[in-house]
Length: 150
Image 1 (spheres, one colour):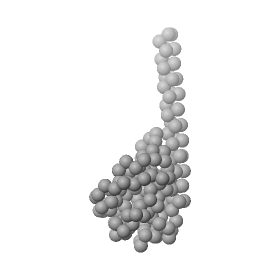
Image 2: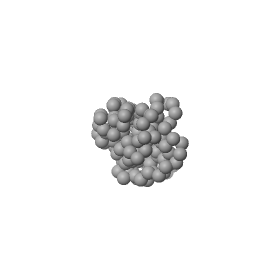
Image 3: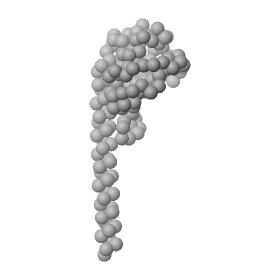
Image 4: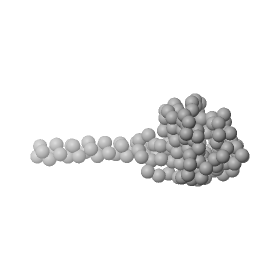
């Protein structure tokens, strides 16, 4: 009887832990969706693709390409409000994180590209959200729908 009671207690504790983790991951997924919506709202057709508002508490990846999957013109990785790596044309650059990133000083180098991909990663799971922003002549011409995946 003692063994059964101990076993039930252990199963109950594990069930509570799993329920808590499941709730935390669900909440983080909701927050990821909300953060991506805020990033998209900060962008506007006709606006600059080089000023990108990013959340401070997420891992954010920004890549600038000519066409999807081909030759990267620039990439930025920011985490917890700090830019950890940034490069334009394969050369490392220094960028400050101030509620996002400002690539306007590098607009001439990025003018030959056409797509900015913005990816946000969840803090508690493997979820990620990404959106592609198309531009020409330093003006946004189209904002894609966000894609959520794991």
